[in-house]
Image 1 (cartoon, rainbow, N blue to C red):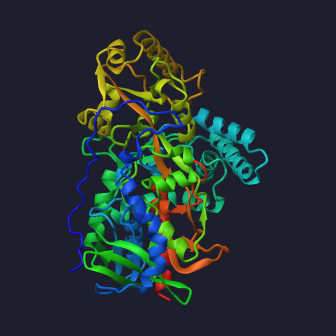
Image 2 (image 1 turned 180 degrees about the vertical axis):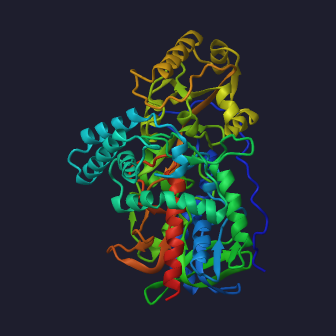
Image 3 (image 1 turned 120 degrees about the vertical axis):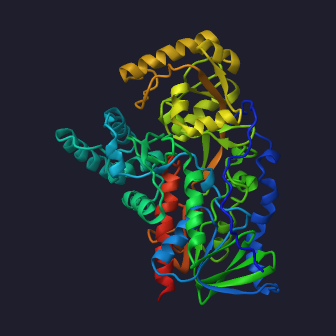
Length: 558
């Protein structure tokens, strides 16, 4: 009997040990063996060949039939399944090649970006400098880009109207779009960006009302002009990791549905095509190879960040870098879709995350910087606007001694965040009762570090960072004890993938939709451009997961 998962995902980040600094951009931050990706490379590389040959192989398992089959049981796959059932699907099968569900989604520590939500209005608007900085930067950098300048014009008008009548918290769909386009170097597909932003607030409501998922705390994140990232709170009122919160609820909801079946340790190897339309998949599981015939197929298998050879193919300088990705994120869905004529876009756009714990590849959430943490180098000095975009912060780290940095928080931040407490419990931090004591423990210059901290606290008090132009300050770091985590960049997100349209239909190389084939999440490209903003991945999997589920059901019901 095919194995059906029936237990709730055990949540935890991998155990973490003390780490050293990374190498330069031309060197590995970890050897290829430490990424855990080499073992999966062969499978991903041969997927296309398997897809071409599987139809001639003897199927030894029992074939299945369903309305919709979904490849990948991460956030996008489960959201797509739940939305499809909401839309009327009677029989949805999700296949997951690993034993546990969650993919990269369960590793997400930040939150979900959404614009113009009721939750944002619980904040006092003090981000004028952030909005004005974005507008000026966009006008300077993208003066010849009509799409970006149209967004600038719209936001400027909205902002002036808000200042004349400042009710609630200032944000807009257009500002969300502008931040995403500027963050993505305007490489993004604007229509997909608009779809993401326009559906973000409704998706927050859908999570709350349909799935029982509350993202109540709204904070700052890198690349966002305003407080936009929506995060969960635990029973103690502390912010907690969004993936560890959302995934088990989505899984429980899928398992509770009589219309959804989840097959684990079941690897999709081929998309079945009939009459030019997707009509199911071929899989390999405990019972061998068999087919799952379906009226529609949704690919939600993630990107390729854990496939070092694939990363190396598109970005040779990232060869061997440690990755934050789950081991199953090896590009299989992309290869299967290419084998049936699907087009890809932006495959060379691979994101480094600047705060990765190098011993294990554990992601240190960007939310800490949004909540007031700073980065210093081994000389005890700040060197960048800590809430800048990930590409900028990563490049700045590589320019520091040892190509790494030290993330600094204080006890007040610890008291407000269960995420930081987790880092402390896993012995990822060093601690000091004074600035000098922390510096000694971390191997940072004590006198220079103490001076940096006093200077930073003055910046917070004045609301001005003349040296690096940071506009997000939160609270001063002056509550002892103090903590440091040594970090360096690691491969985090692959912005490129399958070309889709705003209905989440997969496009072929001629730009036409492949009938019956849909995709959502990191397996797709075009949404994030050359750099993904923190908080946009969760928005991506929810917004486009819902669209893929609805579109697939509408097609299947024909």
